[in-house]
Length: 355
Ligand SMILES: NC(=O)c1ccc[n+]([C@@H]2O[C@H](COP(=O)([O-])OP(=O)(O)OC[C@H]3O[C@@H](n4cnc5c(N)ncnc54)[C@H](O)[C@@H]3O)[C@@H](O)[C@H]2O)c1
Image (cartoon, rainbow, N blue to C red; front, side, top):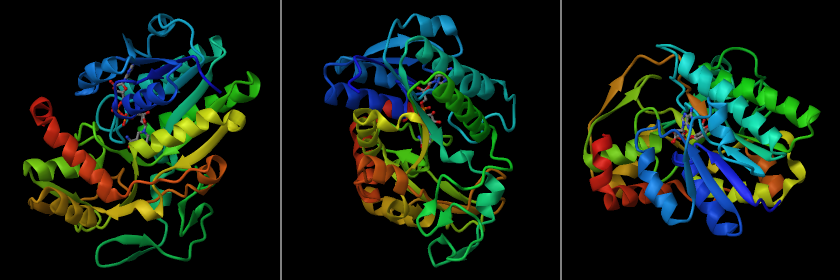
């Protein structure tokens, strides 16, 4: 498809702002609109950045249908607006996460249906249950945990977690709201014949991720090293061996551009998206990398209590999305950490108040 008017909800957030910018640059004939309530601290810093690129901004809330109606017509909606923290609602009222991630997302879906528009959803690997992921047999090396070769569970292999990993059990309110929204999207794809695509993403990171505790761990680690503030290795023995795969946001943007160019798969299909085993790192290994890139060493103390929502290992099996869209993550973790460090150094004055 070649969309004429693209609405990016959450368009001033980390992922949304990158997608809006890459879309505007690579499909210049399109009008790109970033819609955001600027709830995320630091999202306001993206307003001049996107405006300079010719992207319009609508200050609005996805929970409010009138705000969405004020956008006018569009033919592609990319939903990047969310309460994106796995901790959201677990210790206080669940109302904000339920109203944004569930009701708000469904408002976006309905707005897309009314406009005969295609719908791209940024879901999360957090739809997979916590206790099942932590029950996968593992081995321990000097610097990290790794999935063991033998496991009875479907959807786990040396390539990571695939789309057929079981979905029973609990997953956090964040994961539950995303999964519930996915279910409804599948109904829209089937019964309204609406073009819908769902990317279940692992960790996405890069410059302009505001590096707060409830956001990406890679940006947090890099910036804390840059400003010489301490960190903690929380849980799983307090040695920093927990592992995640990392996807650079610019690699994610390349995938989304390919998905838009090839709309034959937009039938409610779900893809696991992430850096994969070749882009996996433990916290302890990330520390070494951050020391190298920033030239700073900071205190990182062990904290033995494991948070109930935390995972020992998550790695994305992205073979399906790679095959269907001829896409592979290109940027190394070192390149991504260096890019975050350079961005922070170049914008330190406007960013420092965030921490
Ligand atoms: N960053 C990651 O590692 C990652 C991984 C998997 C999935 N995702 C998903 O990607 C999407 C974007 O995440 P992100 O990392 O850019 O987060 P972010 O917090 O940087 O961006 C979210 C944006 O949505 C806006 N927003 C929040 N509530 C809103 C509302 N009610 N109405 C309008 N705007 C609202 C915020 O102000 C913010 O600008 C989310 O759906 C998230 O669940 C992110």
